[in-house]
Image (cartoon, rainbow, N blue to C red; front, side, top):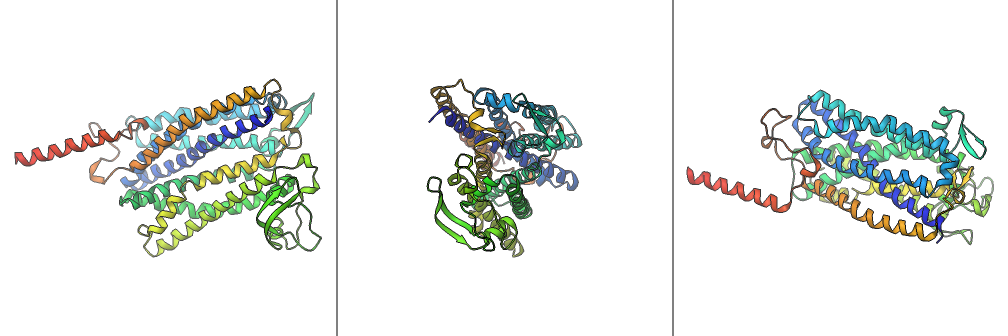
Length: 486
């Protein structure tokens, strides 16, 4: 391995961690805004209890997202200095706009959202939750504008070997930006819905059947039913955009090596093994003409073939062929879960069918798996370009780093990330396993002076097992004392 490959692996490794946590914060922030809005409108305490439960998970995900994002920014200057020198005139301001808008908005209201429930009124707290949710969406907008420009660059000139923006509207609203933004945000909502629904199903399987758990599952499945089919439509439109602007990527995704004769149509390869050296897809299982129908929306439509491009300009079809199918496969299972839930709901069996609940638990990480698979497809499919058609990845890496230096930092990242984010993920799962608060009689509603409250601090939410046992023992002793006294 050379320094270039190790730098690419390092960036891919760190971004794989980073993309998961912002996706969850985008979905959870909007979910929390909906929960608090429903509580204010209906007065039903179940929504407030779910808000107080999921805000702890949101806080953990938000913290890990911020930490992992800092590493990403530094890598542009350390491992990819030539890229920063070439394209910094576009990517630098876009990242700065994210800080000036989304980051300041989130930072200004996050404290009120997490810790201000006892200090501000319900209306102001709701405004804070909405502000944080909007901030996550604005952050995604700027980040995806930058990434989309790297995929389909426009609105610039190259002067003295550097990119100079000449039309910021064209830079931001480049050809792939609307599709990428819609696809990514919808994926974040799907990942959150699957996580919430999986948590509810897990609690139901353990016998924790109550209004809060049922509401979690019901809301998650309604979101899944709305978003999963919509995501398929968005993905289809994104594919048409890719066919127009990044034809080599589409050819690699389909493992399509040679053009078919006019009028015959392109088959759809369901499975196979693209061999980059032999320039053929081995063991292909095909459906005649289905490729033309799905990819070109025509019975005999044609798509570009990999052999239309020079070998050095072809993406690695072996990888993106399978990452794309992993993403699509997860999407099909999401749609199946949504409609199965709808069928059970109509029959009044949604919360009791164990096979369905087990499927929901198994699908809980599917949204995150699909996000990672889609991201790999997007980024690896862009190769060998870091800015499509303008700068090759090999020309973007920092020239002064040796293989041993990049290899050492990569190994260090693996160790630190596994410890830090492994611990954070384990704690987040522990919060989910703890479950929402109990029955309505156990806790008051919004709260007032002197009322007992559930801690809003995330690190106070999951007590140690021995603490739970001690509290239970004290409660039993108190009950025994009451009986003896009477």
